[in-house]
Structure formats: C-alpha cells, structure tokens
Length: 183
Image (cartoon, rainbow, N blue to C red):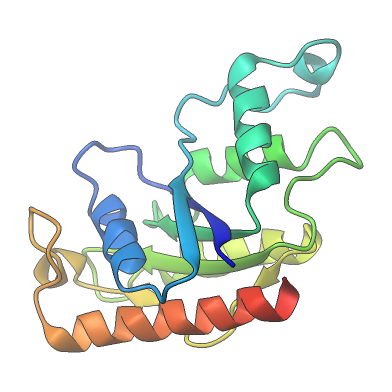
C-alpha cells in the first residue's frame, strides 16, 4: 500500500538547494511512499478575517492537498537563525479554522539545509516547537541538519558523495517506519 507524503520546501527560490535536497530525499526513499510537492509561496499571510466566509483560493487548495496527505516531509533553509516566513505561514493556514487543523496526528520529518556549518539547526528546532502544539509526530532520529549543502549537492541536483546519499537514505527509511507506525 502506497503512503501519500506531502513535501513542503521552505525556500521559494527557483534554484533552491533545499528543493534539490528534497528531490534527492524522495529519490532514495524506500518503496511505498508517494511524494507530492505542495507549493506554499502563493499562500496569503494568515489573517483570521479571511477565514470568515470563503477563504482565499490558495488556502483552500493547500488545505485540500494537505488533508489528503498521510505524512509531511519539511525541507527548509534557515533564515536569520529561524524558520522561513513561508513555512510558518503554511503552518498557520493549515491549523485553521480552529478545530480543523490539517496537521493533527500526521507523522513528519524535518530536514534543514544550509550553506553554513550548523545546517539549519535553529529552523529545524523552531519548526519542531510548532509541531508539538499542532499534535504532529516528528521523526526524532536521525536528526537532519545538512551543512555545507552547496558542496554536497551539485547545481543540477546530484548528491556529490556516497556517504551523503547513504545518510539521506537512512533518514527516509526511518521516516517510512514512522509513517507505518502512525498509519
């Protein structure tokens, strides 16, 4: 049985290394996972007033796509030691209207990538804080902070060495196990 996994990439940049990292992760995932890249760049900033009546179309599209997903893979950079605004906005849009959160009970994995050494540690943990409140089930181990990403993934998205590819496979195997546990 195939499991539907939504992939949310925190970088909106066209040539994003985190988007390349997300693609690399999906390529080394075990069989049985079906990936859907869900775009978040067009979501208007969350405003409760917009949820009264008919919400903006991008919110409705996003909520619908996420409702059909059984799990979520977040792949994101870190901006100024924190989470990109687009990811936080997606969390807020998906958590409302109150009582209809699309996040509730979903297994999740967080992988952060950065050109610097810490690999997005701050963004990774900031995202995990929201997950606790949203009743998501984040993958605990292995933790995934991919530092020096520009040396590990080429411009065309190829993983540059076998150790990195093996680690990405380890992450995805553990994530698949988590999905089965909570599925």
